[in-house]
Amino acid sequence: MVRTNPDRAFFLKASLIFYALWIVSFQLVGRYAVQLPGLDMTSAWDQQIPLIAAFIWPYEICYIFPFLPLFILKDWHRFNRALLAVMIANLLAFIVYVTFPIAYPKPVLGHGFSERILLLEYTYDFNPGANKLPSLHVAFTWIVFLACRKQRLSRLGDFLVLFVAILITFSTIFVKQHLIIDAVTGFLWAGGAWGMAKLLYPRFADPRQEARLAFKHMIRRIAPLALFALVLILFAADLYWKIWIKW
Image (tube, rainbow, N blue to C red; front, side, top):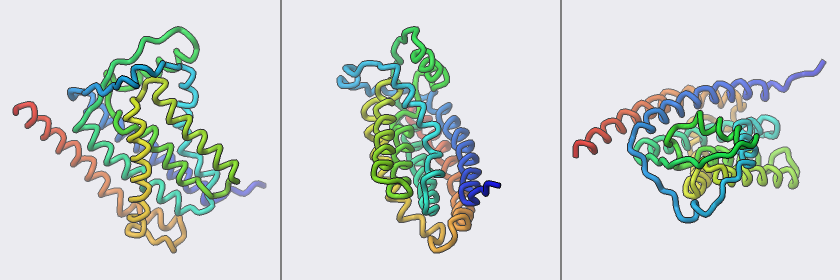
C-alpha cells in the first residue's frame, strides 16, 4: 500500500482552494478594469517582435507550473512564503490594474492548430485588455522558481526549472498577451514580493512551528486583511475614476 505524503496532500488541497479564490478575485478586478479607459503602451520594440503562435504551449504551462513546488519542496515553510508572496504580488498588481489600465489590439491569427489554441486564450481574455501590467503570468512563474530553488532538485534540475521560467516569460511576449514592459515588471514584481514575504512571514506565522500549523495561523491572520484590501482597492478605484472623469 502506497502511503501519501501528508504534507503534500495538505498543501495540494490548500493550493486548489487558493487557485479557485485567485481566479475569482482576478476575474472580479479584470471585469472592473476592462470598463476603464485603457492606455496602449506598445513600444517600437513590441511592434518589431513577431507573433509566434507555437509559444502558446509554454505559455499554457504556467497554469500548472504553480503546482511544481508540491513535488520539489523539502522545506514546506517555503510554500507558505511563496503563497504569501503571491498574495502580496496580487494585491499590489490589482492596485495598478484599476488605476493604470493597459489595453491594446490583438493581432490577426492564422488557421493552424497553435493559432486555434491561442484564439481560445484571446477569446476568454479581457477585451480589449485588462490586468496586463505587471504580468502576473510572469510574476507567479518566478515566485515558483524562487520557492523551488535549492530544494530537492540537483543543479541540473534547478537549471531546467529556470529554463522553463525563462521560456514562459518570453512566451507571454511572443503570443502577444503581454508587452515587454509587462513581462519585465512581472519579473521585478516577483523578486519584490518574495523579499517582502521573507520579512512578513515571521509576523504572520512562527517558522519554528510545523509548516502545516504555521500555514493555518498565517491564513487566519491574512485572509481578513486580504479580503478587506481587495474591497478597499475596488472602492478606492471607483471613487478615483468618478472624480477623475468629473475633473
